[in-house]
Image (cartoon, rainbow, N blue to C red):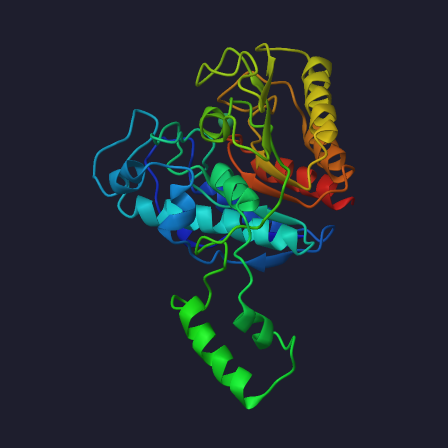
Length: 335
Ligand SMILES: [Zn+2]
């Protein structure tokens, strides 16, 4: 299991705000002190505007530099644009690693699933999961004959070595750590499922992915609750599974099962998970019933689909968040 995180993502906060740095620092502490689940730690690379602009209007990017709060839930911070971009970069790295066959979890903030195409809101600035889903279904860059030579397809020669040098300076003009997806290439998947188990409806993800070809969105959430959407399925690809406040655990698990079953019938080649842990019984922001063992079960249910999978942290505000994340990761890893 690979964990993507960095120290910078804990470098901003507002007193009393539930989306606080301790969510990450206490999770890192627990994950580093446990020995049940072997972990590899990596830091996010970086991202250009191109993959972000598949999901957002240019105004959303420009607004990140305007020093005014976005709404009552979503403060402006110095450097919030850089923090939001790092979270996007981590999402694209997670996609890249999943594509290479790894189990991966992005443990970054800010979260993203409430950010719509045109608006930052609900603790979210850029929609990490939607940007990654659109990168996943974007076509692969068409192979260049020079790249074939570079990979040794026709065998090395002085001429092709020279060609390779010139190509590499053209295709990699940015930092050496910037991944192809981070600079706007696509991963070329034909069927990508986005699964969102945060207790709040992924309204931003729905807004961005609505009727996009190759993508289906499945969201299980409390309704009514913030942000008020998600009572019914919409379009031809966004499926909502609302659960009433204070529903019993069995009822919540039934809706999760229903969503996973529907996701399976879509036959996705890749699953992107908005992993929010605020349907937990002791979460201060909602009225969900789930326990740590339910997040373990959910991780297992997703693993059993036997499809490349990556997960991004969305919500989860209780002090037990680290244990909930560890339970989910163990389920995903089959431990
Ligand atoms: Zn939430």
